[in-house]
Image (cartoon, rainbow, N blue to C red; front, side, top):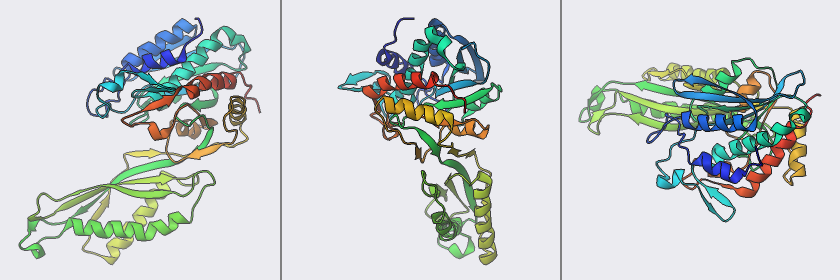
Length: 385
C-alpha cells in the first residue's frame, strides 16, 4: 500500500454512518465502517479477522506479526459514534475549513482510528522492525455499554500494553475516573391534591433523599483526592415523578451518576449510599426508598508513570513537540477495561474532548497528522521493563 493520506482516510470514515443503536435517529451500527476498516487493513498487508459481538455489530482485529515471541502491543479505537440528529446533513459530509475537519466522529474517535490505521499501513512493510506484534482492535459499542472491548478482551490474547484512542490533544493520559449509575425510587400513595393529607407524597420523600445524600456524602467525597483526577463526585442527573398537578404523586425516581477515583470501587460507592438511605429510613419512617441495581459500573484507570508504555508514549510525544508529562481526565474510556485485566494502558489521541459529541465536532489536522507519527514511534518502541 502506498503512503496513506490520513486526512482523506478520515474523511472517508466520517462519511460512513456508524451511530450506536442506543441513540435516536439514523443509527445503523458498526457493520459498514467495520467492513471498510477490515478491507483497509487487508490491503495494507495485515492479518484480519472480524467477529460479531452483537448481531450485525462486529469487532475488527488486524495483526502485524513481528516474528518475535511474546505478548502484543494493542492499538484500540471504537467504531461507533453518538447520534447525528443535532448535526443534520453536515454530520456525514466531512468538510475542511482552515486546518480543521468537521463531521460526526471527526474527533471521537474516527480521527484516532484514522491515525492508527495510517500508522499500521506505514508499519506493514517494516514489520520486521517491530519489537512485538502490533494488533489494531477496532471495537463496537463504546458509546453505550462497552461490549466491544470486553468481547475483544475475552478472547484472551496475550497483551503487553494498550494504547486507546480518544481525543486527548495528544497528551498521554494515564489516569481517569470510573463511573457508577443507578436509580433511586421513592414510593408514596396517590390522592387528590385537594386532600393531600390522604396521600403520601413521593416527591416530598425524594427531596429528603437528595438532601440526605448531599449532606452526608459531599463532605466525605471532598476529603478524597487523586493527584491527577481531583475529587470523586456524585450528581443527581434526572428526576421524574407524578402524573398530574392535581394528584399527590405515588412514585418518584432519580438517576444518579457517581464518578470514582482510584481506590474506590462501584461496590464501595454503593455501600456508602446504602448506609445513608438506611439512616434516613430509621430517622424518617414515613419515607419508603429503594435503590435499584446499577446499569453501569466502570472502573478507573491508574497506570504507573514508570510503565514502559507510558515512557514510550511520552518520548514519542516529546519528539513530535507535544507535552511530555502524563495527565489525567475525568471521563471514562475503554482503557479501564484493559487495566481491569492487569494490562498497562494509556489513552492518547488527536482532538479535544470539548468538541466530542458536539453539533460542530471537528479535529485539528496538524494533530491528526502528528498522531500518525506518534503512534508509529510507539509501535517501534520495545516494551520490556
